[in-house]
Image (cartoon, rainbow, N blue to C red; front, top):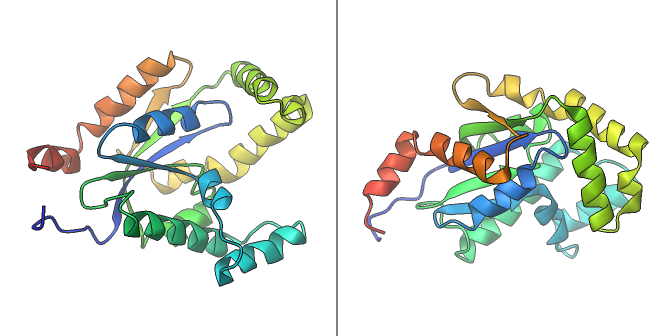
Length: 211
């Protein structure tokens, strides 16, 4: 493996979808398959070391109840990815990075451009918001997060997604964006995602390597 060169930017698969579309589920399953490394936005903040200068910056904003600026969020994300590379959890020379929950908006996508090469964006599409709301309520009750089952909270999450996150599809427009029917069974959604990944030249190159 000594002749395998680490790419300048991480080869990345984005999973995008409205709340309840199953992007976290698909990200976790993909991350359990060799040659894929999954990182959700929540993982970045959960593993944050508040003793570091970057961690202090995060605390500074969150303690005031303010949103963390996009550039700081991306810095935190990048520091987390570098830690994973240094600890050999994520091997960018042979692994695809699978992201869900980040970038959250077009500004973050622009900041991340120098770090990631987005090969595919799988858009988990489910126009039936009633079905997505049902899933969110079910998940909230299962996780004992009763506030998240509130109809007002759910509708606010949909509105935030439409206004801030969905425009990312336009940013990455073209054949990189692959619509996937999120109302299907999770196994069929995974099948469709894997089928899309296997068309990539980068995947075909990886298959030829003796790893």
